[in-house]
Image 1 (cartoon, rainbow, N blue to C red):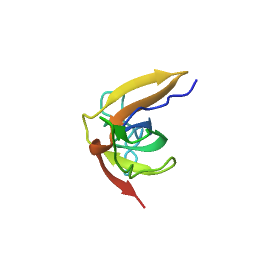
Image 2: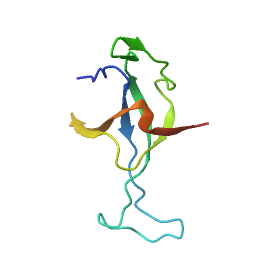
Image 3: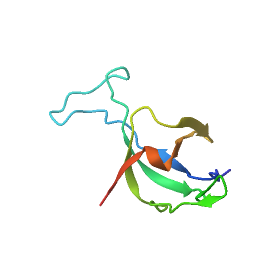
Image 4: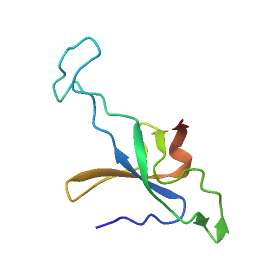
Length: 93
């Protein structure tokens, strides 16, 4: 099953949170911080209210997004987030 985002929406595949700190401390589930970066897996058409906007990301881009943005979905045991393009802060290069 695939997701096809509409308009200015983008589907991101969440990246797993680190289980260990850089100093080697193992984190429990409650201590893990929710990651704010992900990989773009699908991009909408860019058509919003009959107007076309430029979509600034492409499939495969690694992006940083706003902390509480989007809608979380789980499909076939994979976690995704569907967000609007305006909630993307930047692209990692």
